[in-house]
Image (cartoon, rainbow over all chains, first blue to last red):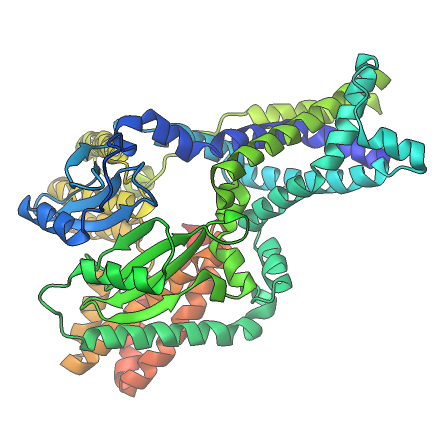
Length: 374
Length: 206
């Protein structure tokens, strides 16, 4: 066991360090981007108490010859509202922040971090090596899971004295012992979050892992050659429901004007909690108005998206509450924020950052232990 | 033993640090050039046009990024317009036969197109002489196909082979629905017409 722990650790060390470091940086993508655009993202006016209505925002943009694609209301007045729009005549699109109370334009995002984070993300996913890199990362993460599990077997104490030593770092000892303790003790304490992050990462990369997770949560596996028959019915039903929806849309007569204020009022009645709301209007090829409200009042303040859909005439169509979804559908809906830590908001991102740095340190302390033994 | 371990670690380091070969994203116009069998004069103009549009697209994508709304969907829309315009400009230096090849090539590799082209859909409506009710239902069926495919994105995300399987499975559902909508003769014509774009749904070979 210890030999395979060593061999596999050495084999994957570089990849694991790159993946952990880039993951730690990428976890802060939103925070860094917002901080760099602080003046437009955050509202400095503390007197703001009433939200500008979506109809007022819409009318304001229409008067400028612009069509609104979506309006993102934040959870509180500390942030400005983000409006995405298009100019069909000039075939241009853009996004702008507006004041939460008076609706005045504050400005556009002036620092773009997209290129930087795209590179970080590509390094994290495939080491900038395309499909080959993706497989290298995938195998390395699988190895990492094995290392974590074999590590806990190697860590397992035989008696009470060993248990005490295995749970504490002896800082007063000599450096090699401290390094040894750092590897064993920290590895033990962070075992669960590291395995969890690794598995949610593998979930994104490998269909078989996706199937394992979804089936274990009571859902349907990912389609493959061997389960075609089994999954076929689910897919046929899905197609049938979309077909019914499409046929209904074709039969609906378009109303002249839809009041988004009324829709938002309806949303707040149906979902009576405080949370950010995102309104996606029926524009271009979209045939429905979708309002997503983020519920953070549940367990551990996890971010749970609830969605209400209206047809293009503003008539209520369906309500999809996160709490009503099956466990596998809940997992599917939040698999990415589960992997990045965003599911728990900023505290979650900070915790994941620490966890990934720990993940990065384990191969380093591991190799230092090995080098000393050489 | 130590030597083996050191060699293996070194290989991993080198492999990980290798810079990705600058694989150009988007259409492979070198491949199109080979298919077109251009003359020397045409080749010079061809490269001028390709260079101009590649630079233009890079600039447009940078502008899009600055808007903060640079999702894949938005990028694809921008690229689609650019490629269509490029095709239009390329037509000026190509003969009739080459124009068809270029058109088919650009149509085939157009980014963000998962379903049969609008051109083919229009051809289906015309060739099959669909009545207004059939047209409405035909469009709704295609719309359901695209929506169902996109809805399964979470399941095939990042895996082209799985994406192809989902595409084919939903295409079977579409064919079943169309079989009920069309007459036997119309359905046979539909199958015949769609073979023109039999490459659709084969994401792994794109």
